[in-house]
Image: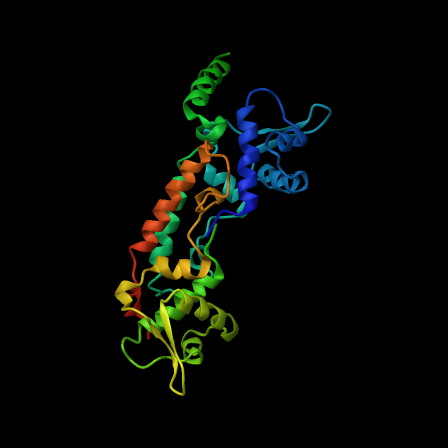
Length: 151
Length: 134
């Protein structure tokens, strides 16, 4: 029971964008260089993130990627689900369930674990995790975002 | 992020034994028949459960498997770890950590998840599930 490599890479990539949020687009090359990520695999992962609207692809000479929303409005759960598909700890936790044993006594355990994992992941935003320091980043981004809205 | 199919099968298989109480050993064939499981995978999975001493293999004509301890003393976590190895939701949660970034902000999140999943699995014993089975 562990996070897929694809989801872990997706999180790393989105964190790079979060750290540079508000300063234009970042090319995939640059994202990969920042965290030593595999270029080919990242192309596929960023197309998934892009399809989920978490990042926006900008074409052209100064093209690249930027976050699709404010980093405080993107949860870790969204990034993981964009890459892995809906969170499902076991077959019975898919929607619809992929196990027909409706009366299975273990199902409530998976459902409990699923609820806990989902709630922890949904409670963390990309802003909380970027730069390794939630305080600094939240402090610098929040006023900047506010100013931007007023102007 | 999901349970491996091997663990799912192990839970199903060992619950058959838990439902049998102190009765004679149950053959692998019978275990598979009861839950409609594939024999090939189950041989390997029961070897892992045996190695972890959750079940005992009894040789001979009326041989088979039985729980090594009362169902109330075997947790779901033990079954999980017998098959998948130590629970680790991400590289940094392995012992020792398989990721060198000690200051990574994500590590706390994985640690919190790991503790919650660990607790949920450790608090359930086979006895909690066995009675409902045929």
